[in-house]
Image 1 (cartoon, rainbow, N blue to C red):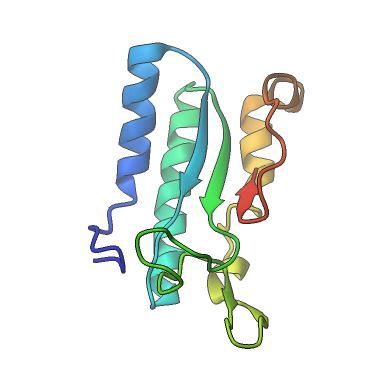
Image 2: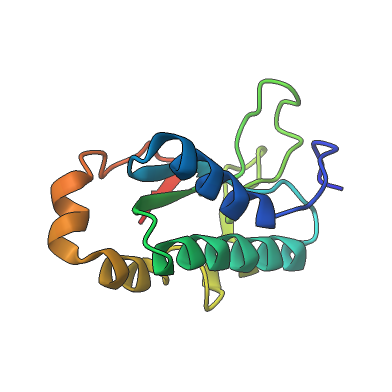
Length: 142
């Protein structure tokens, strides 16, 4: 279970992308996908499995235009305050010191998978149809 008391099930992202595309037949942008856990190895496994699912959708021709991991840094959650640790970077609330977590450096980290995504959909198509190329400071867009 996550800190939010949710089941850890990264495969749900692939299922959701497939269902939405089946119903709407429009390009998909994953705008928020993450996990709040104390154990960073669980975060690593979650990211790897979730992004494997995104790549599987791309290989099947589903136009996934981007993926945003939630979140870059541990942040304030309206339901639980600062107690959730979604971030790829830990934040010491007393000193404001930022410390990268292991998940930031994994081989299949969303930032490192950018090239795979772009190569699958084609750079011109990716840039031409993706108007949202920023994100707030807590999001990673690829």
